[in-house]
Each structure stands twice: as structure tokens, then as C-alpha cells.
Image (cartoon, rainbow, N blue to C red; front, side, top):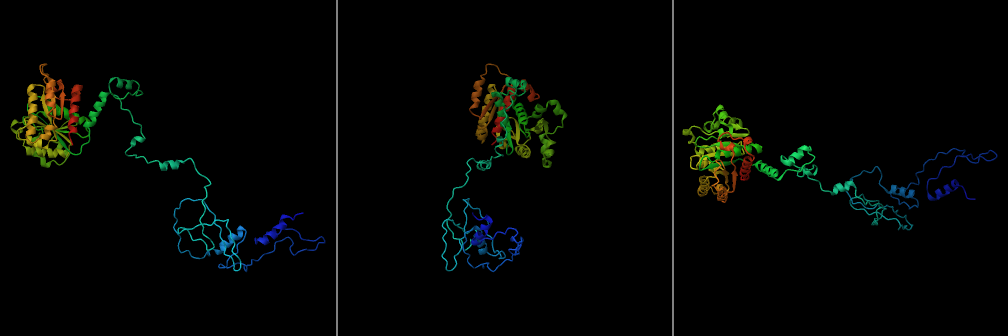
Length: 471
């Protein structure tokens, strides 16, 4: 019959060098009542014996159990009280399969070294702590990872995907809204369905929107457009007012119109109306020149200006004896002052190109508008104006000029309008025709509200064309 487990445990532990298991508490009395041993069921006090503890420099024999191997490694490690001179900085190392380290004890004198080929050693480099002297560095064999992730995680997808540019690409987070149709069948259908059916703007509306974008283009600096002609009464001042009001409607900054007509110009009367202008303070360009040194702000400049909505105007001199006294140098002083506060300026030059202020106007102009009519004399004078500019050092102004033909008098059918347009179109950058409109032909107040849609469309084309010429 085999011995009990508690009787076999002590001899095995003694042979292996392990701590002995405690004896069972039991009564060791004989049958006659006499004590068989000094122990009567209590554990005797054990005094530790340090005589068998090996020194730090004494080699530790290799044991077959893991407990003895761990004790031998602890004895060969430096004492806890030894000072640590330096701690290597942690470095990020590539992931590799985990390997186990088995210390190899140095054999004692007279004993052969034991070979343990089944346990791999760990290879160390300069970034890791130095191993004990009993370690034998070997190359760790490659081991296949125990687990491999096949499907990428959300963090991996975010790390691999490029970061969106929130500033230059705001449309990544907002759906593009289709423009709302205005007028016509599309606009009526949109209004009846409460926006559920949005067919988008028509081709005509898209063209109107494009004109508005061209007019409202942001400008870097101040620009000036001169409106001139060689013949009076063909729509020069009405074109200046209509284009100025159109610029004021679409641009974020208000434009300014200057009356430099030497023949008692009526620019302000056409923009405000005769009655309102007579009730206002009669500030003119002559008053501004007399006090120009004291004008150092837009507030101070506003005292000498008139306002037709968002269109700001400087009135011309009404006295014929004084109106023709405006020189080129004086106009340049006015233009320099205006350029400090306005990005777009229109100058009504009056009739002719030879009066005193004309050289200063052309010198500071960025582009020009040539006013013409469908009459034979009006078309010839417009062509003569372009030839005069090209022959007097203003080739760029003539080449980039915008010719505006206003059907002011509604000429008879004997006049070939198409032939006049073809005659002028080849010598300028663009030719635009303004249809006959009583709101322009009466010679009184010009307001966009009373003009025909075709007339307003023509003024929008003129405004967009001159803004396109600002480079």
C-alpha cells in the first residue's frame, strides 16, 4: 500500500532543498499513554540559520527547481543599498515576440559545467540594462505572434486618413444649397410649394447674378472712370448717374461721382432732382477746393458732398464764369483726396476734351466711357474721340474704352442701328446699347425704380465692364 502524500512530501522536499512542509498537528501518544516524542501537537520555534547562506561572490550551484533558480538570481544581483549611478533613458523599441530568460549558474570548482541547450537566452544591446554575469547572450529565435488583428480599428482608420482642411473646404460639412429662383414660372412654383420644389434659377437669372458678382468684386486701391463725349445731349450725364446708382446698389463700398463739367453741369440735379438740390446747401467743387487743407477725414469731406442713396456726389460749379476755371492741378488735388476714402470714382467730364481740367482727368483715369447716340453725327463724334485719344498719348484708354450708345431721341427707321454699332465696335473694348427710356430722355431725375428692365440691365453691363477694367 503506498504511503500517504504527507509522508512522502518531506523526503522529496529535503532532497530537492525546498522548505519542508509543516508537520501535522496530531497527538503523538502511545497506546499506554506515554509520550512518543517531545512534540505534543504544537509547532516548535525555529531559529533561522544563516551559516549556510552563500556569499555574494560564491558561485551558486544550479538547481533543478524554479525556486532555487530564482534564489540564485537574487543572490547574484547587486545589493539593494548599492547606489544607482545612472538610469538609462527609456527608448521606444519595435515590438517583438516575448522571450524568456534563464540564468546559467557558474559551476563550482571541480564540477563540470551543466549544459542547458533547451532554454534560449536574451540578447541585450546598449539601450537596456546590463544583464548579470551568469547570463549568456544569445540571439532570440523568431516566434510567430500569438494573435494578429485582421480588421483595422477606428483609430487606425483615423490615423491613416488625411486631415480635412476646415478653412479652405467648408463645404465638407454643409450641403450646397441650390439658389432660389426669382420671378417667372420657377419662382412661382417655388413660392406655391413653400420651397419644396426648387428648379433653380433660370438662364436669365444666372446671367443677372453673374453681372452682380462682377460689379461687387473687391478692389485693391482706388480707381477712376471718366465719362466724356464730343457732343452734348447724347446721354453722358444720365449714363454717369445710372451707372453710379448701379454701382452703389451692388458694391459694398459706396462710389463717388464728380461733376467736372465746365459748362454748368447738372450731375447732382439728375441724381437728386431739381427741387431737392435747391433745398440742400449749395456746396460745390469750388467750396471743396477752397477748404481742402482742412479736410482730413470722411466726416469732414461729407460736408461738401451730396447723397443720392449710397451714391456720393460732388456738385459742379453753376456759375459760368467760375466753372471753366477748374484746372488740371486742382482736379488732381480733388482726385487725390477722393482716393483716400473711395475705391470707385466716376467723373462727368462734360463736352469736349480740350478744356483746362481734361488733361488732369485723362491722366488719372483708369478707363473711360465714350457716350454716343444712334444719330449719324453722334457716331462720327464718338469715333473722332477715340482717334484723338490714340493720337495724343492715351492709346491704352482708347483701346480699353467702353462705348455706350443711348437711344435717347428714338431715331427714325432710316438710321441703320446695326451699321453704327459695327462701325464703333471694332475700335473699342466693348459696345453697349441703352434702349430708349422716358426715365432717361426727359432730362430730369434718374432713378433705377422707374427705369425699364432692359435699361437697368444695360447699366449693369456698363458697371460690370468698367469694374472688369480695373486691374
